[in-house]
Length: 217
Image 1 (cartoon, rainbow, N blue to C red):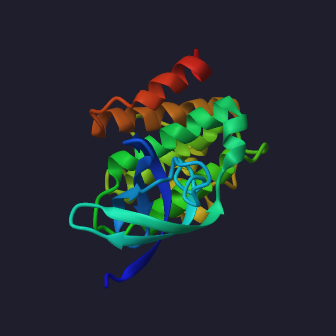
Image 2: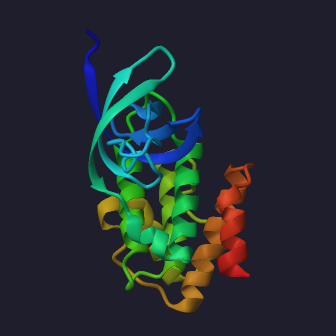
């Protein structure tokens, strides 16, 4: 009999397969990014239906196959349902999932990335933290966790913006969203992070295109 695994993670992507199944991409602490099939998840009354959507975070019970896992149960920690009620927050959240999916790899321990993703989703639901700050902080920290960052930002920054940059690099995900920036300093910080992203990433994110249309234009 195959051994059942229990992995802590968050669903990055979910797509329909066949008549009733779903194909999931889950970022896990223990095994990095995995592909899992939720058999019958789209069938009315399925116990897997609520646990097999994007943003769902918790402990997933799975069986390992040759090329993919089979989801058999989940102990959900957070559905992040409130994101769906806020179009702007949902757009940011979708971009965060896609950005994490780009960087995540199979069979690579990803605890810090998962913590960053989870805390960033929580921050999107916190009225006191502006989304315009959460985005560059998330991007810079994720690039730093994957070794793609510069100890000093590109270009010249004010002392306040430089301090924010250094704070993000040095701070664990659980304590990231505990500071605020004035509008001019935030603009500096955003420009520096965007320049860094352009230097290291040649991918265009579909969710970012949507976000820029709905939020920034």
